[in-house]
Image (cartoon, rainbow, N blue to C red; front, side):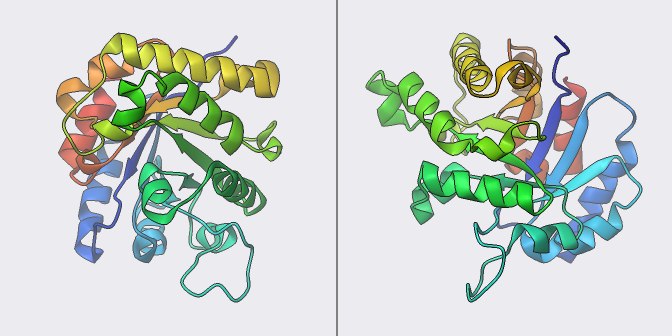
Length: 247
């Protein structure tokens, strides 16, 4: 079975103004034919401008969220088609900060993933446990349940990725051990294959939880880790490229 093509995606979160596009240009200038897919997901205000700035480069542009609706009276929301129209190729859905801060359930995440596919975007579907859930011994059950509940059937035979982000590691500097990462990624892989058959073996499973140049090599070479969803380290080209180089 062919291994998934690695994907390194940067999530800028609510950071970045027009001047920040210089960092994106620096990433593109150093992104060669490495066999790794690269993506940057800026705030919505920069999606079009980043797409224009990176046109013709190897770096894809993505959104950080999309509405489950295609259009209508949903003030402040952005549809997948709108992101695609602005130049996005991917979109993150179900990030832990959306789940915790905006009350998004697995069912909501699944509808957003479906909307992403309909709108022509490749979804990156996030899953992950809290510290309390891990300490209670529920980490595997929680994450497997999220995978089952967040991946709609519309993803069958389409391009998508799953990102495992242990919530307790995001922005804290804490990182799970390599055996903990491998255990979770193997469980996610088994669940994706159960849901989508042999095609599930081709889906990249990204790790996202305080990835930085100093720990990237160990994480990216762990079993069933097919890339990374990078937060703060994606805001600076040097740091992001350091992670890309570690694969």
